[in-house]
Image (cartoon, rainbow over all chains, first blue to last red; front, side, top):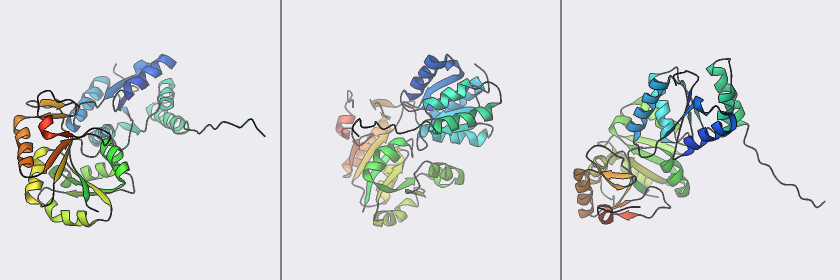
Amino acid sequence: MSSPDAGIVLGHGDIAAALVSAVELITGRGDRLIALTNAGLDNDQIDDLLRRTIESSGARVIFTDLAAGSCNMAACRLVRWRPDLIVVTGVNLPTLLQYVMHDGGGTDQAVSDAVQRGSGSLRVLQGRSRAG
Amino acid sequence: MPVELYRIDDRLIHGQVVVGWGQPMNAGFIALVDDLVASSDWERELYRMGVPPQMDLFFASVDDAPGQLGAWRADQRAGILLTGDIETMARLVSSADGITAVNLGGVHHRAGRIERLRYIYLSPAEAQVLRDLEAHGVAVTARDVPSARPVPLRELLDAGAKA
């Protein structure tokens, strides 16, 4: 894969692989995303993994799971050298579904729409009492 | 309230520190002792982004840290002191009184290091530095998150030690 529309999902443990697996299951477009984990890596190694993946994939968008996490730190550190990259943190499944379903309109618009979808997807669904 | 946790973690500010330890401790600040970060405006700003707004983040070089330790210890809030490697913590212990316990939170794989736990890899030289710390009265335990069992140094250095 070498495309600026490709997205990298970088997170703790198996979360990235699980999210990409779910995207593939739901949309068949899991190949638009690359899953990476920080497991077992120090900061320099995470930086290196991310840099190599960006170079080999041509991806411009990095989704990370936690603002305070080492994955997000690595992505932000890389943006210092590659200001054309876009980092989205706090990723969830609706964000990625929207991103991969975006056809046309450019990467910036795809990211904007994905963030809007993802951030609006958290809701409290309370059951109603049958009584009364 | 004293600095409650002296932690060695090569990821520095990250989820385990901010969320895993910081939240249950109700930590009010993190003191990051690292020469590279202390000397870089950009790195300092990067790490500030990673902590919640109610948590202060202090930076110091290894040489400056002993002079600031008194102020950190006098802070009314619980605090975490972080170094990115064993050598830095050992230098700090040797130049500042009152550090009686050190937490090994994350030392990842590098050439020449041997796996001790899935999150702790040590070179022979690093293992010796830790032994020296204990010989000088510092309790060294490995523990990535508060819910994990603290692994004493003696057990950690046994060949088959696993979390």
